[in-house]
Length: 569
Image (cartoon, rainbow, N blue to C red; front, top):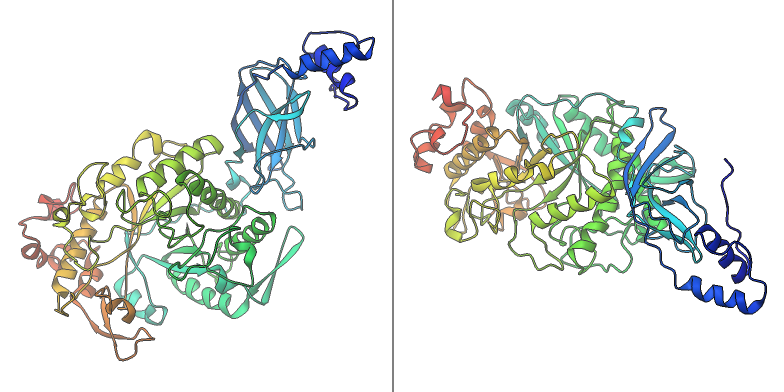
């Protein structure tokens, strides 16, 4: 069937065609006065059509996008057809555009097919789509935008996710990698910041444009990541957007540099920002897909750090709805780049322990609210296999004893708790286990604990290394016995002098404070031994026996729900 097209012409001609499609006049007005009357009448007509995209996927041929939509079927005051428009992440509306990508007959349901154009300048992999109708005033959107939800289908790397033998992880110093192997580390993390990796020496072409990366910096990451992944340590990359005056397009327009801000919101709100961010994401995903052992394999990707606090992901004071929408658009670019390269890699956003605490609704937001908004937006615009990387430090961080944190007034065992940390971690995991937050396949979303530690000193400089080790033992057992947590990456292998000066001696090793600009291990703490043996079934209970008197318990199973080693107590 030949599709009917409207021809834009004089107001009288357009009005006549509109009325004919709607069941009105069947001929043009015979004089100018009649045409003017019909035009005024048409201007009073309204469009009651409404639609929602219910599916947007890449077809089995890997070259076609299939979109389905459902609506109320009311096509009055339209030309009777539905039109699918493509929007880039930086485009908020179709405006006066007429270049629809596909069309379908109007009704309560519709299907559209269009080319993916993968690997060309017209690549639609990262696009979102809206349904529109044609009225006398032009094309009008009648649906919310929707992204492709299965980018993993086109991934060259379809290898399954390699689950480590235990949840034990450590923020490592690459100079101490031999020590890490001796400790039996199963997980580790590495920070990758935009402002450090851009430069010269490595040229990368994406969709016809060439982008430049710093060869010495990238080769340093290659050495670190490959050293870990080649020894079966699961590597988590934390992607950060630092301020770089040479690349202003990577910063959301209107954002100003702040002295107390560490990193900034990735920018996909402009064409230049989107294209650069997409190229960086694709470069990293391809570089660390595991195909080259000299580069290594990243299996988990965290986009930003503690995004509920703009100190780590700054764009300026704004509502949580705008903030999360802006973040999710950027997150989805990384997600699409990663999943279309390695289908079973995992992608996370990061939260600190402030579940409701400190939230001001403009620069700081509650972790629960971030989860709620992120999920609700994805429900409309296309769900993803997102996960949560959480940081359940003791409250306050300068006191390793977390089991009495309720005395702060910030810890309760319910969803209204201001803070969620180790002692009430079930609040987070139980919440994400509810059906509203489960993956599309019904599984509980992946949760990792990717930054947390316990200080071995206090403000007076007292040696509390036994308390530190006991706190780790207790926290690890809580995590290891919780089926919804995949990994626990402890901060850190060696004290950092800058942190020690703030009363935070987190390391398995103390550091040489006479060299404040370097991290030099000095002496092992009790924590080193506990960390080494905590996941060894033959040694774990023996190595943590000392901790019971410090915590004030007789058996671990008395304070650890579903304690993994209960039968051995």
